[in-house]
Length: 210
Image (cartoon, rainbow, N blue to C red; front, side, top):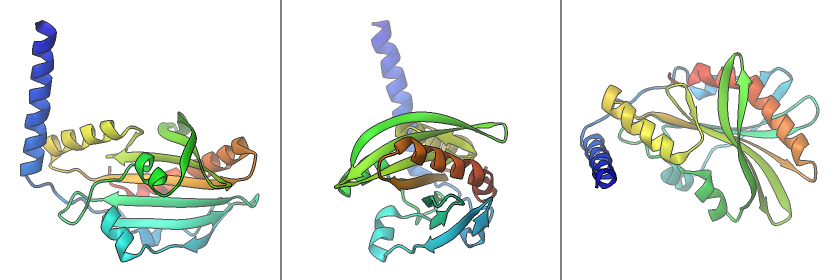
C-alpha cells in the first residue's frame, strides 16, 4: 500500500507540473551570440560547407536558430556539426530525438554507448553511436544542453525542461550533433569526432545561454 501511495503521489506531482508548464508561458531566451558568428576556422579545423534547410524540414524541426556545417581537420577528417537551438518561445518546437529521426531516414543503429569527455575541467556527457544506411556507416556524437548542463537521455531532458519552467519560466534547450562517416576504422572515426568536440565545445558554450 505504501509503495502504491508513493507512486500515486509522484504521478500526481508530475501531472500537476506538466499541466502548469503547459498552461503558463515561458520566456524566450536568446542566444548569447548569433550562429553566423560561429568560427569558420579553429585549431586546424576549417569550414568546408554550410547547409541551409528547406522550409519543409524547418517546419518539422522548428528550431529558433540552427547551425549546419562541415569542417575538415588537419588529418583530412570530414566532420559535420549541427546545433539546433530552441528558445522556448511561441514559434519554437520541441527537440527531436535522433533515436527516432535517424531510423525514420533509413539508418539503423549498429552500436550505442554513453561517453564522458573532460573539456577544460568540465565533464561533457554525450551519446556515441554508429548508424548504417546501405553500405555507408557513420559515427555520431550527440547530447542535449540545458542551462549549461549536458544531457544524454530524452526523458531527463523533459524533466529538466519542466523543472526550469517551474523555477525560471524558461524551457530553452539545444541539441548538438557531430557526425563523421567512415569505411572500416570506427575507433579512428570516434577519436577524430572526440577531438573535434574537445576543440569546439568551449566555443559552443559562448553561444548557448547558461
